[in-house]
Image: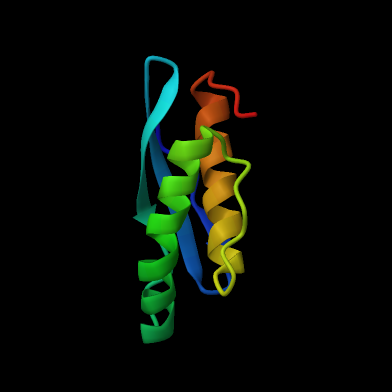
Length: 91
């Protein structure tokens, strides 16, 4: 299930969530800030951490990654919307 694109001041963020057996099995960042080199570096560091936290917690209620606040917040928003539209309730 794809979440909506969430615009940030550094670029759009969109995630796809894969749910199997009622559990989040994977999250893929379809769009993320990568226009500026600094944004690329931040995304390269933050996205794997966000992915792992979502899979571990089974929720969009994740901590913000320091230095990647806009990306973290948008990632969680897109993820929660995807879960809501797919009938999966995040806790």
